Image (tube, rainbow, N blue to C red; front, side, top):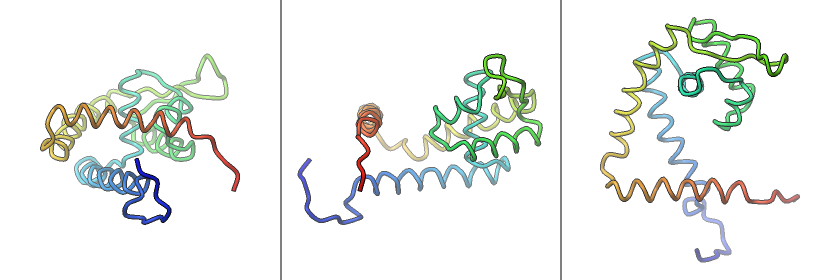
Length: 153
């Protein structure tokens, strides 16, 4: 990639990536909110818990890169609505394990097919080869971002 000396926001890749991510996320969020009365943080928790069976809030923060306040609020909302059960974590008495209730599993089973439909609507025009290349590039971006050393200003 050629080095530029002037920052032009619309050509700045971190900005473009963020904008695309936000647009996709907002599209998905509005669909989930309308159809299921659930937001993106709650859906992410439901999806992570469904895949893991029982998981701590710390593990959810680590795997989703959501901050602990967002995860905590989403967990409380889901517990209050009867979708998630919190039980003491036998490995860490300061935390709880989150599991889906029967109602939470039903919610997941209703939302997951809709999530796949939305994914198809957004990415369906791309070929299988383009999608493999895109996913591979996302993995490389993740690795490169994790390797960047923070610098003091």
